[in-house]
Length: 114
Length: 113
Image (cartoon, rainbow over all chains, first blue to last red; front, side, top):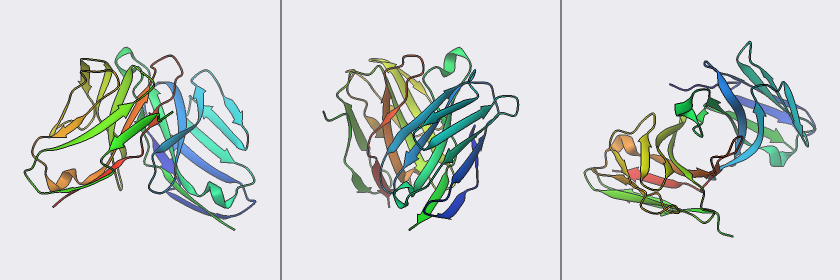
């Protein structure tokens, strides 16, 4: 079963608006990562947040992590049409056998209209 | 700098045939992974490898075989393809250091008729 559950499954916004995607997970983690996938392409890493961090920024991206609620959110500010893609959260679960392995959520499809 | 490549990009085969999907990386990263992506399931890990000659099962390994005789190559073989193995397959790699990220290939779209 998937570790991460993402919400919403699809999001449609206008250019310039902010987009927020949420991810929940079930077990303790070492870190949580967000990836982006353009249609027909492989995944590209966006940002990583460690389990002892609460917030991280990278350009127009802001990620928060609440380990007590086992949830994370990805905020894209001032969205652009080029941000249209699928966004996935992925967790590296705590525990020796999980090192280097990621468990992915089902993704949020973001559509940004010009 | 080629990075990580997959071949073929598209493959159509018939039920019962053996199919091998290739993955090659130029970084000498220790860890390599095979995922399949299906609607409604996201990405699911099939097999992974921590180093040459070290492989282990992921979430959905049945019907698949992997090998890793060289660090840079990680082929995935479907020994007897079934229609349920129709999917998009992604290979990924990572150095395996703390807080490292995974780098993905462009994917192989496999159709089993």
